[in-house]
Length: 48
Image 1 (spheres, one colour):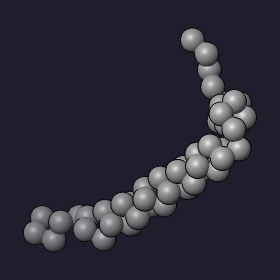
Image 2 (cartoon, rainbow, N blue to C red):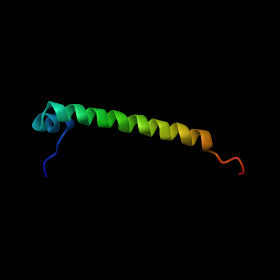
Image 3 (cartoon, rainbow, N blue to C red):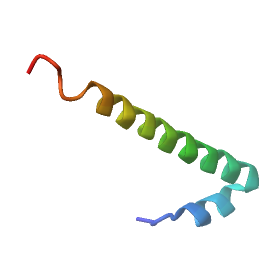
Image 4 (cartoon, rainbow, N blue to C red):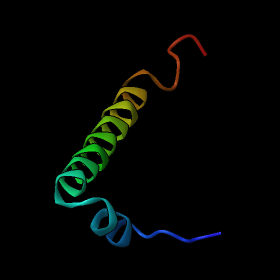
């Protein structure tokens, strides 16, 4: 089993893919943050 870290993987598949990968990770982090903020707003439920 080969253990890929992000940089090795990116250099293996090229610079364009590296940009795509980092953009994807950024988007994922932003989405996670938004979901967490949303849950902060709706939790705890008001009727409990």
